[in-house]
Amino acid sequence: MKPSAALALLGACVVAALVMAHPLSQTLLAGVLLVLLMQTPWRRARLFLLGIAVSSFGLFLIWPLTAHVGSHPLWNGPILPVLGSLDVTREELAAGAVQTLRLATVALAFALWALRLDQDRLVRETRLARRSVLIVALATRLIPTLERDAAGFVEALRGRGVEVEGLRGRSRLLAPLVASSLERALTLAESMEARGYGRPDRARVARARFSWRERTALAFSLLLIVSSLLWL
Image (cartoon, rainbow, N blue to C red; front, side, top):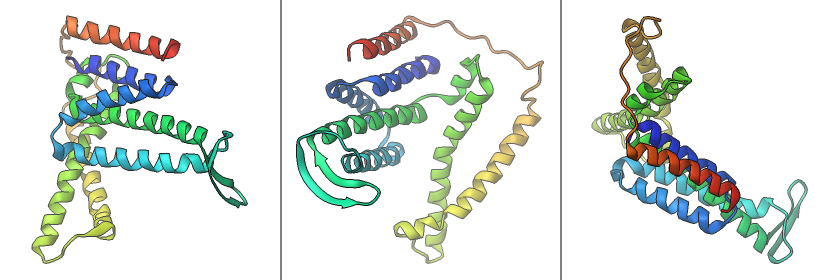
């Protein structure tokens, strides 16, 4: 499947997740995206899955304490000057679950876009906002590079007898990672300039027509958006 058709399908999933009101529909959509993401090698997907799990669980914990809706209390907490009463109701838990599923679905769609789509083909197929798509594609491709750099720094420090453990130890890798990413960005900009990027007389690559799979994906994307707006 072409990356542009896959991107349209993922975009439809994001739109559907943001407008869906039924928890069952959101759970089904999140489950499908999770199954697709689990087909990615575990070494590449583990950081995305960890970030999705931590952020979603944190939202589920914070939402009932900050929202003030519902008439079926399950727990009555103290009253704070700014936040008010820290109580938990059934309605707040239900709303927190819906918001958590929305966040998880959007994050899963982004993870699939970052890990499963061919960014080079996506840039070649894009006709509108090519510069913006190129910037996002380059930033997405640098994520695995940063992971390899971090692993290399850890091995180098381990060879010198320094063990990198815990959050404090890994936070010390931030400065060399930023420096290496800036240096790589300058090198990439020089290589793009040397290859004539941005010139008006650039070569154009012939684009293949959409196959029945791509057309089906586009039709399903439209159907998913319409059905999420009307029924789900």
